[in-house]
Length: 389
Image 1 (cartoon, rainbow, N blue to C red):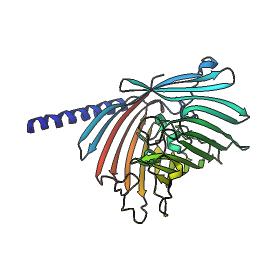
Image 2 (cartoon, rainbow, N blue to C red):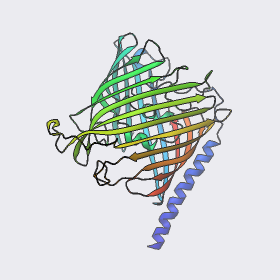
Image 3 (cartoon, rainbow, N blue to C red):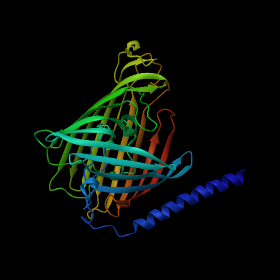
């Protein structure tokens, strides 16, 4: 048994060493000079990025992205190598007045539909979008996973932002184009492993002000603007989720701020979650008011990245947290009936841009504390991102 254990540890060590060697070897490739590859354009309402080209109007752009990731977790000594994301998307026009977005993901030998949206202008800058896509809530969530400064989104984003959902959304700009907004009604249950309850609805809205000029959610766009950029936003949603077999209606609030000055970018978000009513059955008439008290949970993250002078390398630090706020007499349990203490994620990462966000190598190290299990550990991730076309 000791021999088998030693062989297993040796295999895991060899796998990790191979990944490190590949990552270092690729990082030695000549990175594109500043400005040689334009960054991804601002995400659409669904989070899918625009692509330019000479394609006919019905097919305005197609693309595919592959992300390969190796993760090592301690103290479990667990090594995982996976195709984190394999996505293909298309966008274009239909019937001269509609635009569409389609995006699929290939995982586990299956094809999953992520985005399927149809949009049309109804009054100048005001548009209506129908279909399945991202909910307008959370700056980092609305940004494409291929345009992040670190390997992936923060701990707080995973806890508070919703998955993709089917619904209808109205979005546009105000009289001042530096103000953008979106509001919609969606299915409470999203795709994948989502706690929303089928048959219920979610309402969400978001508003962002960029007083100093355009500032999309793309992190580290690799083009230095002609001056500082600032984004300030607020968002809210109301939904119903299954928490330990109980239907719980929740309200979440989000505040976002992003500042870019030269080669430095700072991004932060804060979330608050308030249970409004709960019931053992899904009948609103049987709902009971929860005990009075402060918000059930809150969290957020603070992230700062600094680009190298030639814009090919970036160092990023981030701290994220989740803090449940217990009500008196609840026994210190969360809405799932489990004891929960604050969770946190603190770390540093490095990105080598080979062709902007289209081809890059990323690695990060985080110190993690799980508020449910109480375990504190370390996580190291290495990732290769390639936009195939």
